[in-house]
Length: 589
Image 1: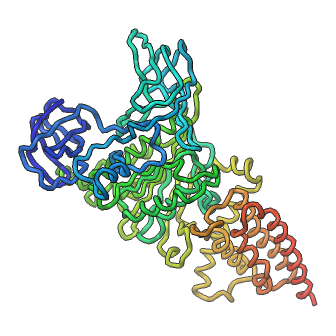
Image 2: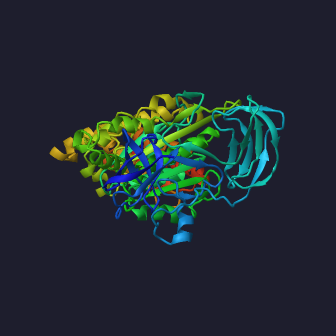
Protein backbone atom coordinates (compact mmCIF):
# COMPACT_ATOMS: atom_id res chain seq x y z
CA UNK A 1 0.00 0.00 0.00
CA UNK A 2 1.16 3.50 -0.84
CA UNK A 3 0.78 6.26 1.73
CA UNK A 4 0.91 10.01 1.13
CA UNK A 5 -0.58 13.24 2.40
CA UNK A 6 -3.08 15.85 1.22
CA UNK A 7 -1.52 18.76 -0.66
CA UNK A 8 -4.65 20.47 -2.02
CA UNK A 9 -8.43 20.20 -1.67
CA UNK A 10 -10.78 21.53 -4.37
CA UNK A 11 -14.33 20.33 -3.75
CA UNK A 12 -14.48 16.60 -4.57
CA UNK A 13 -10.92 16.72 -5.96
CA UNK A 14 -8.03 16.04 -3.59
CA UNK A 15 -4.38 16.28 -4.67
CA UNK A 16 -2.06 14.02 -2.63
CA UNK A 17 1.74 13.83 -2.74
CA UNK A 18 4.00 10.92 -1.87
CA UNK A 19 1.87 8.47 -3.89
CA UNK A 20 4.57 7.24 -6.29
CA UNK A 21 3.77 3.55 -5.69
CA UNK A 22 0.02 3.95 -6.26
CA UNK A 23 -1.69 3.09 -9.57
CA UNK A 24 -4.28 4.84 -11.69
CA UNK A 25 -7.84 3.98 -10.57
CA UNK A 26 -6.70 2.63 -7.20
CA UNK A 27 -9.16 3.04 -4.33
CA UNK A 28 -7.81 5.30 -1.61
CA UNK A 29 -8.83 6.29 1.92
CA UNK A 30 -8.51 10.02 2.54
CA UNK A 31 -7.77 11.66 5.95
CA UNK A 32 -8.57 10.32 9.39
CA UNK A 33 -12.24 10.21 8.33
CA UNK A 34 -11.28 7.39 5.92
CA UNK A 35 -13.24 8.95 3.04
CA UNK A 36 -13.36 6.69 -0.01
CA UNK A 37 -11.91 7.97 -3.28
CA UNK A 38 -10.33 6.88 -6.55
CA UNK A 39 -7.13 8.01 -8.26
CA UNK A 40 -8.04 9.50 -11.66
CA UNK A 41 -4.71 11.11 -12.62
CA UNK A 42 -1.03 10.61 -11.74
CA UNK A 43 1.90 13.06 -12.14
CA UNK A 44 5.13 11.61 -10.72
CA UNK A 45 4.31 11.20 -7.01
CA UNK A 46 1.21 13.45 -7.10
CA UNK A 47 -2.17 11.74 -7.36
CA UNK A 48 -5.41 13.48 -8.27
CA UNK A 49 -8.15 11.77 -6.29
CA UNK A 50 -11.89 11.85 -6.99
CA UNK A 51 -13.48 11.62 -3.52
CA UNK A 52 -16.93 10.07 -3.33
CA UNK A 53 -17.89 11.71 -0.04
CA UNK A 54 -18.19 15.26 1.34
CA UNK A 55 -14.69 16.80 1.63
CA UNK A 56 -15.50 19.83 3.78
CA UNK A 57 -13.14 20.16 6.74
CA UNK A 58 -10.20 18.33 5.16
CA UNK A 59 -6.77 19.92 5.77
CA UNK A 60 -3.43 19.75 4.00
CA UNK A 61 -1.05 17.26 5.48
CA UNK A 62 -3.73 14.72 6.44
CA UNK A 63 -2.92 11.10 5.49
CA UNK A 64 -3.96 9.42 2.24
CA UNK A 65 -3.66 5.66 1.88
CA UNK A 66 -3.94 3.64 -1.33
CA UNK A 67 -5.68 0.30 -0.90
CA UNK A 68 -3.83 -1.17 -3.91
CA UNK A 69 -7.00 -2.34 -5.67
CA UNK A 70 -9.27 -0.69 -8.29
CA UNK A 71 -12.83 0.39 -7.47
CA UNK A 72 -14.75 -2.89 -7.58
CA UNK A 73 -18.21 -4.25 -6.89
CA UNK A 74 -19.13 -7.34 -4.91
CA UNK A 75 -21.10 -9.82 -7.00
CA UNK A 76 -23.07 -12.62 -5.40
CA UNK A 77 -26.41 -13.61 -3.82
CA UNK A 78 -28.12 -10.69 -2.11
CA UNK A 79 -27.90 -8.22 -5.01
CA UNK A 80 -31.51 -8.60 -6.17
CA UNK A 81 -33.96 -6.46 -4.23
CA UNK A 82 -31.18 -4.32 -2.73
CA UNK A 83 -30.69 -0.55 -2.93
CA UNK A 84 -27.16 0.85 -3.11
CA UNK A 85 -25.53 4.23 -3.45
CA UNK A 86 -23.18 5.05 -6.35
CA UNK A 87 -20.25 3.03 -4.94
CA UNK A 88 -22.34 0.01 -3.89
CA UNK A 89 -22.78 0.87 -0.23
CA UNK A 90 -26.02 -0.77 1.03
CA UNK A 91 -28.31 2.09 2.03
CA UNK A 92 -30.70 -0.03 4.11
CA UNK A 93 -27.86 -1.44 6.22
CA UNK A 94 -26.31 2.03 6.66
CA UNK A 95 -29.68 3.37 7.81
CA UNK A 96 -29.87 0.65 10.49
CA UNK A 97 -26.44 1.70 11.78
CA UNK A 98 -26.48 5.48 11.37
CA UNK A 99 -30.03 6.66 10.68
CA UNK A 100 -31.30 8.57 7.66
CA UNK A 101 -28.05 10.42 6.86
CA UNK A 102 -24.95 8.64 5.58
CA UNK A 103 -22.01 9.47 7.88
CA UNK A 104 -18.62 10.16 6.32
CA UNK A 105 -16.21 7.26 6.15
CA UNK A 106 -18.84 4.61 6.89
CA UNK A 107 -17.61 1.17 5.83
CA UNK A 108 -20.35 -1.44 5.43
CA UNK A 109 -19.95 -4.57 3.25
CA UNK A 110 -21.99 -4.35 0.04
CA UNK A 111 -23.34 -7.88 0.50
CA UNK A 112 -24.52 -9.31 3.83
CA UNK A 113 -21.78 -11.51 5.28
CA UNK A 114 -24.08 -13.15 7.85
CA UNK A 115 -26.88 -14.34 5.53
CA UNK A 116 -26.80 -18.03 4.66
CA UNK A 117 -27.70 -19.25 1.17
CA UNK A 118 -28.58 -22.80 0.11
CA UNK A 119 -26.06 -23.87 -2.53
CA UNK A 120 -26.93 -26.70 -4.95
CA UNK A 121 -23.87 -27.97 -6.88
CA UNK A 122 -24.14 -28.76 -10.59
CA UNK A 123 -20.69 -30.33 -10.97
CA UNK A 124 -19.01 -33.22 -9.17
CA UNK A 125 -15.52 -33.86 -7.86
CA UNK A 126 -13.08 -34.76 -10.62
CA UNK A 127 -14.75 -32.62 -13.31
CA UNK A 128 -12.74 -30.09 -15.29
CA UNK A 129 -14.21 -26.59 -15.16
CA UNK A 130 -13.12 -23.35 -16.80
CA UNK A 131 -13.85 -19.64 -16.55
CA UNK A 132 -17.55 -18.85 -16.70
CA UNK A 133 -18.70 -22.43 -16.04
CA UNK A 134 -21.63 -22.73 -13.64
CA UNK A 135 -20.67 -24.84 -10.62
CA UNK A 136 -23.98 -24.49 -8.78
CA UNK A 137 -27.04 -22.36 -8.06
CA UNK A 138 -28.59 -20.41 -5.20
CA UNK A 139 -32.31 -19.57 -5.24
CA UNK A 140 -31.97 -15.84 -4.51
CA UNK A 141 -35.65 -14.87 -4.90
CA UNK A 142 -38.72 -16.79 -6.08
CA UNK A 143 -37.92 -15.86 -9.69
CA UNK A 144 -34.12 -15.44 -9.76
CA UNK A 145 -31.89 -18.49 -9.66
CA UNK A 146 -28.43 -17.09 -8.92
CA UNK A 147 -25.83 -19.05 -10.88
CA UNK A 148 -22.46 -19.38 -9.16
CA UNK A 149 -19.79 -19.15 -11.87
CA UNK A 150 -16.07 -19.83 -12.00
CA UNK A 151 -14.45 -16.34 -12.05
CA UNK A 152 -12.80 -15.18 -15.30
CA UNK A 153 -9.21 -16.33 -15.64
CA UNK A 154 -9.65 -19.42 -13.41
CA UNK A 155 -9.79 -23.06 -14.55
CA UNK A 156 -8.96 -26.41 -13.03
CA UNK A 157 -10.31 -29.72 -11.69
CA UNK A 158 -12.96 -29.85 -8.97
CA UNK A 159 -11.32 -31.28 -5.86
CA UNK A 160 -14.27 -30.87 -3.49
CA UNK A 161 -17.80 -29.46 -3.67
CA UNK A 162 -20.81 -29.93 -1.41
CA UNK A 163 -24.45 -28.93 -1.09
CA UNK A 164 -25.45 -26.95 1.97
CA UNK A 165 -26.11 -23.56 3.54
CA UNK A 166 -23.16 -21.18 3.24
CA UNK A 167 -22.33 -17.55 3.93
CA UNK A 168 -20.75 -15.54 1.13
CA UNK A 169 -17.22 -15.98 2.44
CA UNK A 170 -17.32 -19.73 3.08
CA UNK A 171 -15.73 -22.08 0.55
CA UNK A 172 -18.27 -23.97 -1.57
CA UNK A 173 -15.84 -25.48 -4.08
CA UNK A 174 -12.12 -26.26 -4.15
CA UNK A 175 -10.33 -26.32 -7.50
CA UNK A 176 -6.96 -27.85 -8.24
CA UNK A 177 -5.25 -25.60 -10.78
CA UNK A 178 -2.90 -26.85 -13.48
CA UNK A 179 -0.01 -25.55 -11.43
CA UNK A 180 -1.07 -27.87 -8.61
CA UNK A 181 -2.16 -25.02 -6.34
CA UNK A 182 -5.61 -24.94 -4.81
CA UNK A 183 -8.20 -22.25 -5.54
CA UNK A 184 -11.04 -21.77 -3.07
CA UNK A 185 -14.32 -20.59 -4.62
CA UNK A 186 -17.00 -18.83 -2.58
CA UNK A 187 -20.50 -17.61 -3.48
CA UNK A 188 -19.10 -14.11 -4.09
CA UNK A 189 -16.63 -12.59 -6.54
CA UNK A 190 -15.38 -9.04 -7.17
CA UNK A 191 -14.92 -7.17 -10.44
CA UNK A 192 -13.42 -3.72 -11.27
CA UNK A 193 -16.22 -1.41 -12.42
CA UNK A 194 -14.27 0.32 -15.20
CA UNK A 195 -13.42 -2.91 -17.03
CA UNK A 196 -16.13 -4.70 -18.99
CA UNK A 197 -16.64 -8.34 -18.01
CA UNK A 198 -15.29 -10.73 -20.68
CA UNK A 199 -17.42 -12.83 -23.03
CA UNK A 200 -16.83 -15.15 -25.99
CA UNK A 201 -18.60 -13.25 -28.79
CA UNK A 202 -21.01 -10.36 -29.31
CA UNK A 203 -23.93 -10.90 -31.70
CA UNK A 204 -26.33 -8.61 -33.54
CA UNK A 205 -29.60 -8.33 -31.56
CA UNK A 206 -32.45 -10.21 -33.28
CA UNK A 207 -35.37 -10.04 -30.81
CA UNK A 208 -37.28 -7.06 -29.38
CA UNK A 209 -37.23 -6.05 -25.73
CA UNK A 210 -40.99 -6.06 -25.18
CA UNK A 211 -41.98 -3.17 -22.90
CA UNK A 212 -45.80 -3.13 -22.95
CA UNK A 213 -45.68 0.52 -24.09
CA UNK A 214 -47.47 0.86 -27.43
CA UNK A 215 -45.52 3.76 -28.91
CA UNK A 216 -42.29 1.90 -28.11
CA UNK A 217 -43.15 -1.66 -29.13
CA UNK A 218 -45.20 -0.80 -32.23
CA UNK A 219 -43.49 2.26 -33.69
CA UNK A 220 -39.96 2.56 -32.24
CA UNK A 221 -38.90 -0.85 -30.84
CA UNK A 222 -35.67 -1.52 -29.00
CA UNK A 223 -33.88 -4.83 -29.46
CA UNK A 224 -33.11 -7.12 -26.53
CA UNK A 225 -29.46 -6.17 -26.11
CA UNK A 226 -29.92 -2.77 -27.77
CA UNK A 227 -29.25 0.79 -26.66
CA UNK A 228 -31.70 3.69 -26.51
CA UNK A 229 -31.88 7.29 -25.32
CA UNK A 230 -34.80 9.31 -23.97
CA UNK A 231 -33.99 13.02 -24.28
CA UNK A 232 -36.53 15.57 -23.21
CA UNK A 233 -37.07 18.85 -21.36
CA UNK A 234 -38.11 19.18 -17.72
CA UNK A 235 -41.66 17.92 -17.14
CA UNK A 236 -41.96 15.92 -20.36
CA UNK A 237 -42.07 12.54 -18.60
CA UNK A 238 -38.53 11.11 -18.82
CA UNK A 239 -38.60 9.60 -15.35
CA UNK A 240 -42.13 8.18 -15.65
CA UNK A 241 -41.18 6.66 -19.02
CA UNK A 242 -38.06 5.13 -17.43
CA UNK A 243 -40.18 3.80 -14.57
CA UNK A 244 -42.64 2.27 -17.05
CA UNK A 245 -39.82 0.56 -18.94
CA UNK A 246 -38.32 -0.70 -15.68
CA UNK A 247 -41.69 -2.00 -14.50
CA UNK A 248 -42.89 -3.76 -17.62
CA UNK A 249 -39.85 -4.59 -19.81
CA UNK A 250 -39.73 -8.32 -20.49
CA UNK A 251 -36.32 -8.79 -18.90
CA UNK A 252 -35.18 -11.27 -16.25
CA UNK A 253 -33.30 -8.60 -14.26
CA UNK A 254 -33.76 -4.81 -14.03
CA UNK A 255 -30.92 -2.53 -12.88
CA UNK A 256 -32.22 0.99 -12.22
CA UNK A 257 -29.68 3.78 -11.67
CA UNK A 258 -31.01 7.05 -10.27
CA UNK A 259 -28.01 9.18 -11.21
CA UNK A 260 -28.21 12.75 -9.93
CA UNK A 261 -32.00 13.00 -10.12
CA UNK A 262 -34.30 14.06 -7.28
CA UNK A 263 -34.57 11.79 -4.26
CA UNK A 264 -38.38 11.67 -4.34
CA UNK A 265 -38.19 9.89 -7.72
CA UNK A 266 -36.26 7.02 -6.13
CA UNK A 267 -38.76 7.09 -3.27
CA UNK A 268 -41.53 6.50 -5.82
CA UNK A 269 -39.66 3.47 -7.14
CA UNK A 270 -39.15 2.07 -3.64
CA UNK A 271 -42.82 2.56 -2.78
CA UNK A 272 -44.28 1.28 -6.05
CA UNK A 273 -42.11 -1.65 -7.13
CA UNK A 274 -42.74 -3.97 -4.12
CA UNK A 275 -46.52 -3.54 -4.59
CA UNK A 276 -46.61 -4.02 -8.38
CA UNK A 277 -47.04 -7.50 -9.78
CA UNK A 278 -44.85 -8.48 -12.72
CA UNK A 279 -47.21 -9.61 -15.57
CA UNK A 280 -44.61 -12.13 -16.75
CA UNK A 281 -43.92 -13.90 -13.43
CA UNK A 282 -46.81 -13.00 -11.10
CA UNK A 283 -44.30 -11.93 -8.41
CA UNK A 284 -43.37 -8.53 -6.97
CA UNK A 285 -41.23 -6.44 -9.31
CA UNK A 286 -38.59 -5.91 -6.60
CA UNK A 287 -37.78 -9.61 -6.77
CA UNK A 288 -35.97 -9.05 -10.07
CA UNK A 289 -34.69 -5.48 -9.51
CA UNK A 290 -31.42 -3.90 -8.30
CA UNK A 291 -31.60 -0.20 -7.41
CA UNK A 292 -28.70 2.26 -7.34
CA UNK A 293 -29.65 5.61 -5.81
CA UNK A 294 -27.21 8.43 -6.28
CA UNK A 295 -29.54 11.38 -5.89
CA UNK A 296 -28.91 15.06 -6.54
CA UNK A 297 -28.04 15.81 -2.90
CA UNK A 298 -25.32 13.12 -2.77
CA UNK A 299 -21.68 13.96 -3.61
CA UNK A 300 -21.36 14.87 -7.29
CA UNK A 301 -18.29 12.68 -7.91
CA UNK A 302 -20.18 9.51 -6.96
CA UNK A 303 -22.47 10.01 -9.96
CA UNK A 304 -19.54 9.13 -12.17
CA UNK A 305 -19.04 5.83 -10.35
CA UNK A 306 -22.76 4.95 -10.15
CA UNK A 307 -23.08 4.41 -13.92
CA UNK A 308 -20.17 1.95 -13.92
CA UNK A 309 -21.34 0.23 -10.73
CA UNK A 310 -24.75 -0.37 -12.32
CA UNK A 311 -23.52 -1.70 -15.64
CA UNK A 312 -21.01 -4.04 -13.97
CA UNK A 313 -23.80 -5.59 -11.89
CA UNK A 314 -25.89 -5.84 -15.08
CA UNK A 315 -23.02 -7.59 -16.93
CA UNK A 316 -22.73 -10.12 -14.07
CA UNK A 317 -26.36 -11.22 -14.51
CA UNK A 318 -25.94 -11.13 -18.31
CA UNK A 319 -23.08 -13.63 -17.90
CA UNK A 320 -25.51 -16.02 -16.18
CA UNK A 321 -27.52 -16.09 -19.42
CA UNK A 322 -30.23 -13.67 -18.33
CA UNK A 323 -31.86 -10.82 -20.22
CA UNK A 324 -30.96 -7.65 -18.31
CA UNK A 325 -32.37 -4.15 -18.81
CA UNK A 326 -30.46 -1.20 -17.38
CA UNK A 327 -32.08 2.22 -16.90
CA UNK A 328 -29.82 5.25 -16.31
CA UNK A 329 -31.67 8.36 -15.15
CA UNK A 330 -29.97 10.47 -16.25
CA UNK A 331 -26.69 10.44 -18.16
CA UNK A 332 -26.77 14.26 -18.27
CA UNK A 333 -26.16 14.39 -14.51
CA UNK A 334 -23.29 11.95 -14.95
CA UNK A 335 -21.85 14.17 -17.69
CA UNK A 336 -22.15 17.19 -15.37
CA UNK A 337 -20.05 15.32 -12.81
CA UNK A 338 -17.46 14.66 -15.55
CA UNK A 339 -17.49 18.36 -16.41
CA UNK A 340 -16.98 19.42 -12.79
CA UNK A 341 -14.06 17.05 -12.25
CA UNK A 342 -12.52 18.04 -15.60
CA UNK A 343 -12.72 21.71 -14.63
CA UNK A 344 -11.09 21.08 -11.26
CA UNK A 345 -8.32 19.12 -12.99
CA UNK A 346 -7.80 22.23 -15.18
CA UNK A 347 -8.20 20.24 -18.40
CA UNK A 348 -8.82 22.00 -21.70
CA UNK A 349 -12.62 22.31 -21.96
CA UNK A 350 -14.60 21.28 -25.01
CA UNK A 351 -18.02 22.49 -26.10
CA UNK A 352 -20.05 24.10 -23.27
CA UNK A 353 -17.30 23.24 -20.81
CA UNK A 354 -17.66 19.46 -21.13
CA UNK A 355 -14.38 17.55 -21.41
CA UNK A 356 -13.16 16.67 -24.90
CA UNK A 357 -13.45 12.97 -24.04
CA UNK A 358 -17.21 13.15 -23.26
CA UNK A 359 -18.17 11.25 -26.43
CA UNK A 360 -15.68 8.43 -25.86
CA UNK A 361 -16.75 8.00 -22.21
CA UNK A 362 -20.39 7.77 -23.26
CA UNK A 363 -19.48 5.26 -25.95
CA UNK A 364 -17.52 3.14 -23.43
CA UNK A 365 -20.67 2.97 -21.29
CA UNK A 366 -23.21 2.16 -24.01
CA UNK A 367 -20.93 -0.30 -25.81
CA UNK A 368 -20.98 -2.58 -22.76
CA UNK A 369 -24.58 -3.41 -23.75
CA UNK A 370 -25.29 -6.15 -26.27
CA UNK A 371 -26.25 -9.75 -26.90
CA UNK A 372 -23.33 -12.04 -26.14
CA UNK A 373 -22.23 -15.63 -25.84
CA UNK A 374 -21.02 -15.85 -22.25
CA UNK A 375 -17.91 -17.61 -21.00
CA UNK A 376 -18.49 -21.26 -20.13
CA UNK A 377 -18.75 -24.56 -21.93
CA UNK A 378 -22.57 -24.39 -22.24
CA UNK A 379 -22.26 -21.33 -24.58
CA UNK A 380 -25.27 -19.63 -22.96
CA UNK A 381 -26.61 -16.41 -24.47
CA UNK A 382 -27.14 -13.31 -22.35
CA UNK A 383 -28.37 -9.83 -23.23
CA UNK A 384 -27.87 -6.40 -21.69
CA UNK A 385 -30.06 -3.52 -22.91
CA UNK A 386 -29.09 0.03 -21.88
CA UNK A 387 -31.63 2.86 -21.83
CA UNK A 388 -30.36 6.28 -20.82
CA UNK A 389 -32.42 9.39 -20.10
CA UNK A 390 -30.87 12.68 -21.22
CA UNK A 391 -31.88 15.99 -19.62
CA UNK A 392 -30.76 18.75 -22.01
CA UNK A 393 -31.02 22.27 -20.53
CA UNK A 394 -34.14 23.94 -21.89
CA UNK A 395 -34.94 20.82 -23.93
CA UNK A 396 -32.31 21.78 -26.52
CA UNK A 397 -30.99 18.50 -27.94
CA UNK A 398 -28.29 20.31 -29.89
CA UNK A 399 -26.24 20.44 -26.66
CA UNK A 400 -23.16 18.16 -26.41
CA UNK A 401 -24.51 15.32 -24.21
CA UNK A 402 -27.57 14.75 -26.42
CA UNK A 403 -25.55 14.92 -29.63
CA UNK A 404 -22.83 12.58 -28.34
CA UNK A 405 -25.52 10.13 -27.20
CA UNK A 406 -27.37 10.21 -30.53
CA UNK A 407 -24.16 9.28 -32.35
CA UNK A 408 -24.01 6.08 -30.27
CA UNK A 409 -27.55 4.80 -29.64
CA UNK A 410 -29.83 3.17 -32.20
CA UNK A 411 -33.17 4.20 -30.70
CA UNK A 412 -34.20 7.80 -30.07
CA UNK A 413 -37.42 8.39 -28.13
CA UNK A 414 -37.69 12.17 -28.37
CA UNK A 415 -39.95 13.61 -25.68
CA UNK A 416 -41.89 16.72 -26.67
CA UNK A 417 -42.86 19.50 -24.24
CA UNK A 418 -45.85 20.44 -26.45
CA UNK A 419 -47.27 16.91 -26.24
CA UNK A 420 -46.73 16.90 -22.47
CA UNK A 421 -48.48 20.28 -22.23
CA UNK A 422 -51.46 18.76 -24.08
CA UNK A 423 -51.41 15.88 -21.56
CA UNK A 424 -50.49 13.36 -24.25
CA UNK A 425 -48.35 10.73 -22.49
CA UNK A 426 -45.99 9.10 -23.17
CA UNK A 427 -44.94 12.37 -24.83
CA UNK A 428 -42.76 10.62 -27.42
CA UNK A 429 -42.90 12.64 -30.63
CA UNK A 430 -43.63 10.21 -33.50
CA UNK A 431 -42.27 12.64 -36.12
CA UNK A 432 -38.81 13.12 -34.57
CA UNK A 433 -38.23 9.73 -32.91
CA UNK A 434 -36.69 6.77 -34.69
CA UNK A 435 -35.48 3.20 -34.22
CA UNK A 436 -32.75 1.67 -36.35
CA UNK A 437 -33.90 -1.80 -35.22
CA UNK A 438 -37.22 -1.64 -37.14
CA UNK A 439 -36.00 -3.53 -40.22
CA UNK A 440 -34.06 -6.21 -38.32
CA UNK A 441 -36.95 -6.88 -35.89
CA UNK A 442 -39.77 -6.75 -38.48
CA UNK A 443 -39.42 -10.43 -39.32
CA UNK A 444 -39.70 -11.41 -35.65
CA UNK A 445 -42.93 -9.41 -35.20
CA UNK A 446 -44.42 -10.82 -38.42
CA UNK A 447 -43.61 -14.38 -37.34
CA UNK A 448 -44.45 -14.21 -33.64
CA UNK A 449 -47.29 -11.65 -33.40
CA UNK A 450 -49.05 -11.17 -36.75
CA UNK A 451 -48.06 -11.52 -40.44
CA UNK A 452 -49.46 -8.01 -40.97
CA UNK A 453 -47.54 -6.31 -38.15
CA UNK A 454 -44.80 -4.61 -40.20
CA UNK A 455 -47.22 -3.54 -42.95
CA UNK A 456 -49.69 -2.11 -40.42
CA UNK A 457 -46.92 -0.26 -38.57
CA UNK A 458 -45.79 1.30 -41.85
CA UNK A 459 -49.33 2.39 -42.69
CA UNK A 460 -49.83 3.97 -39.26
CA UNK A 461 -46.55 5.91 -39.53
CA UNK A 462 -47.57 7.08 -43.02
CA UNK A 463 -50.95 8.31 -41.74
CA UNK A 464 -49.27 10.25 -38.91
CA UNK A 465 -46.87 11.89 -41.34
CA UNK A 466 -49.69 12.80 -43.73
CA UNK A 467 -51.65 14.28 -40.82
CA UNK A 468 -48.70 16.55 -40.04
CA UNK A 469 -48.66 17.82 -43.65
CA UNK A 470 -52.44 18.31 -43.77
CA UNK A 471 -52.38 20.07 -40.40
CA UNK A 472 -50.45 22.92 -42.00
CA UNK A 473 -53.25 23.39 -44.56
CA UNK A 474 -55.94 23.23 -41.87
CA UNK A 475 -54.21 25.99 -39.90
CA UNK A 476 -54.16 28.23 -42.95
CA UNK A 477 -57.59 27.68 -44.54
CA UNK A 478 -59.58 25.48 -42.13
CA UNK A 479 -60.81 21.88 -42.14
CA UNK A 480 -63.58 22.58 -44.68
CA UNK A 481 -60.98 23.20 -47.41
CA UNK A 482 -59.88 19.54 -47.26
CA UNK A 483 -61.30 16.85 -49.52
CA UNK A 484 -63.37 14.06 -47.94
CA UNK A 485 -60.50 11.56 -48.29
CA UNK A 486 -58.06 13.96 -46.59
CA UNK A 487 -60.54 14.60 -43.78
CA UNK A 488 -60.78 10.82 -43.32
CA UNK A 489 -56.99 10.67 -43.01
CA UNK A 490 -57.16 13.34 -40.28
CA UNK A 491 -59.86 11.36 -38.45
CA UNK A 492 -57.86 8.11 -38.67
CA UNK A 493 -54.69 9.86 -37.47
CA UNK A 494 -56.61 11.39 -34.54
CA UNK A 495 -57.74 7.89 -33.60
CA UNK A 496 -54.13 6.66 -33.77
CA UNK A 497 -52.97 9.49 -31.50
CA UNK A 498 -55.78 9.46 -28.96
CA UNK A 499 -56.80 5.80 -28.91
CA UNK A 500 -53.55 4.00 -29.68
CA UNK A 501 -50.50 6.13 -28.82
CA UNK A 502 -51.94 7.79 -25.71
CA UNK A 503 -51.34 5.41 -22.78
CA UNK A 504 -52.07 6.00 -19.10
CA UNK A 505 -49.17 4.92 -16.89
CA UNK A 506 -51.35 4.98 -13.76
CA UNK A 507 -54.33 3.05 -15.15
CA UNK A 508 -54.58 -0.50 -13.83
CA UNK A 509 -55.13 -2.04 -17.29
CA UNK A 510 -53.77 0.52 -19.76
CA UNK A 511 -50.37 0.75 -18.05
CA UNK A 512 -49.30 -2.40 -19.95
CA UNK A 513 -50.39 -3.75 -23.37
CA UNK A 514 -49.40 -7.14 -24.72
CA UNK A 515 -48.15 -7.37 -28.30
CA UNK A 516 -51.36 -9.19 -29.27
CA UNK A 517 -53.47 -6.34 -27.87
CA UNK A 518 -51.32 -3.77 -29.69
CA UNK A 519 -51.80 -5.71 -32.93
CA UNK A 520 -55.60 -5.75 -32.52
CA UNK A 521 -55.63 -2.00 -31.74
CA UNK A 522 -53.69 -1.22 -34.92
CA UNK A 523 -56.05 -3.41 -36.92
CA UNK A 524 -59.13 -1.66 -35.48
CA UNK A 525 -57.88 1.81 -36.45
CA UNK A 526 -56.93 0.64 -39.96
CA UNK A 527 -60.25 -1.24 -40.28
CA UNK A 528 -62.06 2.05 -39.65
CA UNK A 529 -59.85 3.87 -42.17
CA UNK A 530 -60.15 1.23 -44.91
CA UNK A 531 -63.89 0.55 -44.63
CA UNK A 532 -64.71 4.24 -44.32
CA UNK A 533 -62.62 4.89 -47.45
CA UNK A 534 -64.73 2.32 -49.32
CA UNK A 535 -67.91 3.99 -48.02
CA UNK A 536 -66.70 7.39 -49.24
CA UNK A 537 -66.45 5.96 -52.75
CA UNK A 538 -70.11 4.91 -52.38
CA UNK A 539 -71.07 8.54 -51.66
CA UNK A 540 -71.22 8.31 -47.85
CA UNK A 541 -70.65 11.64 -46.08
CA UNK A 542 -67.47 12.16 -44.08
CA UNK A 543 -69.46 13.75 -41.21
CA UNK A 544 -71.56 10.60 -40.83
CA UNK A 545 -68.45 8.38 -40.87
CA UNK A 546 -66.67 10.58 -38.32
CA UNK A 547 -69.65 10.38 -35.98
CA UNK A 548 -70.17 6.61 -35.98
CA UNK A 549 -70.95 5.43 -32.39
CA UNK A 550 -68.53 2.50 -32.75
CA UNK A 551 -65.59 4.91 -32.68
CA UNK A 552 -66.17 5.45 -28.97
CA UNK A 553 -65.92 1.70 -28.46
CA UNK A 554 -62.69 1.57 -30.47
CA UNK A 555 -61.30 4.29 -28.22
CA UNK A 556 -62.25 2.32 -25.07
CA UNK A 557 -60.60 -0.89 -26.35
CA UNK A 558 -57.34 -0.11 -24.49
CA UNK A 559 -59.16 -0.42 -21.16
CA UNK A 560 -60.39 -3.97 -21.90
CA UNK A 561 -58.61 -6.70 -19.85
CA UNK A 562 -56.30 -8.99 -21.78
CA UNK A 563 -58.52 -12.04 -21.37
CA UNK A 564 -61.47 -10.30 -23.07
CA UNK A 565 -59.80 -8.53 -26.01
CA UNK A 566 -60.46 -11.17 -28.69
CA UNK A 567 -64.20 -11.26 -27.98
CA UNK A 568 -64.34 -7.44 -27.83
CA UNK A 569 -62.50 -7.16 -31.16
CA UNK A 570 -65.03 -9.44 -32.89
CA UNK A 571 -67.96 -7.50 -31.38
CA UNK A 572 -66.51 -4.14 -32.49
CA UNK A 573 -65.91 -5.52 -36.00
CA UNK A 574 -69.52 -6.73 -36.23
CA UNK A 575 -70.91 -3.45 -34.82
CA UNK A 576 -68.82 -1.41 -37.25
CA UNK A 577 -70.06 -3.36 -40.28
CA UNK A 578 -73.65 -2.96 -39.06
CA UNK A 579 -73.35 0.81 -38.50
CA UNK A 580 -71.58 1.27 -41.85
CA UNK A 581 -74.36 -0.58 -43.67
CA UNK A 582 -76.99 1.58 -41.95
CA UNK A 583 -75.08 4.75 -42.86
CA UNK A 584 -74.87 3.76 -46.53
CA UNK A 585 -78.55 2.87 -46.52
CA UNK A 586 -79.51 6.30 -45.10
CA UNK A 587 -77.24 8.10 -47.57
CA UNK A 588 -78.88 6.25 -50.47
CA UNK A 589 -82.40 7.31 -49.46
